[in-house]
Every structure is written in C-alpha cells, then in structure tokens.
Amino acid sequence: MATTQRTPPEKSTQTLLKPTLLTQESDTASDCIGSETECVGQRNITRRYKRGYDESMLNELKDMLADVQLQQKSQASKFNEEMQKLMQQNAKITESIQYMSDKYDEVLRQLQQTKSENSAFKTQIKTLEQKLETFERNSKASTLELRNVPESNSEDKSALIELVRSVGDVLNVKVLDTDIRTIYRTKKIPNKSAPIIVEFSSNSIKENIIMSSKKIQQGQE
Image (cartoon, rainbow, N blue to C red):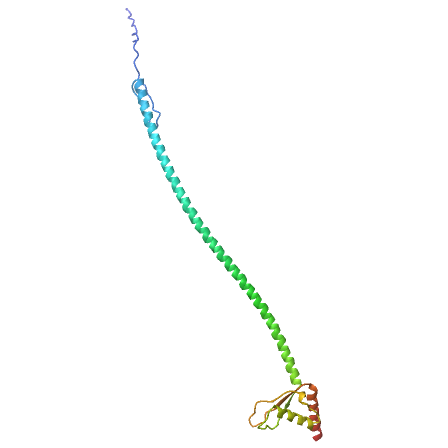
C-alpha cells in the first residue's frame, strides 16, 4: 500500500495584523482596535480630554476653597466683633463690681465709725448718769424739807429765806443767806400747805438743824 506524505503549507510572507489592545491612562479605560497610528491618535485625544477635565475640576475646587476661606474670614470677623462686645461688657461689669465693692467698704467704714461713736456716747452717758446720781445724792444730803408751813399771798424767795433764818434762830442754829443755795415751795397740794425745799451749801447746817429739832422734841416729851 503506497503511503502519501503531506507537505505542510508554506508560511505566508505577509504577517497578519493582530488587533492590539490599548488601555487609556484615564480612570475609564477603553480598548483600541486598529493600527498603532490610530491608537496613538486616539490616546492623545483621550489625554487632552482628561487634562481639560482635571483642570476644570481643579478650578472648581479652588473656587470652593476660596468661598470657604471667605466664609471663614467673615465668621472670624463676626467672632472678633462679638468677642470685643463681650470684653467691653465684662469691663463694664468689672467696673460696676469694683464700684459696688468700694461703696460696700465705705459703708463698712462708716458703720464701724458709727459703732465707735455710739460706744463713746454710751461711755459719756454713763459718766453723766453717775455724776448726776452723785449730784442728786449730795443734793439730797444737803436738802431739807420743811412741812406744814403756812403759805402767804406775797411769798417769794426772799420771804422763804427769811423764814428759814427764823427757824434757825428758834433752833439756835445761825443760818446766813450764803448758806442757802436754793429754796422753793413745791406745787400746791389741795387742802394742805406745800412743803418748802431748802438746799444748803453744806451738809453740816442741815445736820445741825435736824439735831436741834430732835433735841427740842425730846425736851418737850
């Protein structure tokens, strides 16, 4: 049986152009089918489009940033104005507080001064009361009360002094005008003679009159 040997076909001198896949450098890449020249042109167009798009976005971002900066400056200016107002208000409040504090200190000083003056007045009043008490005691010690002495229509101080001198003569006690410091008759009493009050210049005269009066009463008994 004869064997037939096949000869492999000869390769063609012409090289078949295979489609080349080109990826664009943009985010949305697409395939390029065609010759190298066509793909290069298409890629250049894509790059120009991408560059223009990027510049537009960049300008838009710059504008947005500029607007934000303007808003920030405006807000900062308003904030500074508000801060200035608050600082002025705080300064006024501080001034008012200082004024009130000074007034309070002044009132405290006046109150302390008033307390000191009141204390001094109390001391003076107490001293005067003691002096008055001593004076009254001494006055009573040298004061004599004459009762049941009939009243006359023309009675005056001279008549009362003459009356006391007459009483002294009866009691053997010499009474001078200078021995009588003051003399007067008290208010009238209904159906009775008002007593005569005699204040002597010394207690001895009063004591002498009283002793003499007691002796006379004892002699009469």
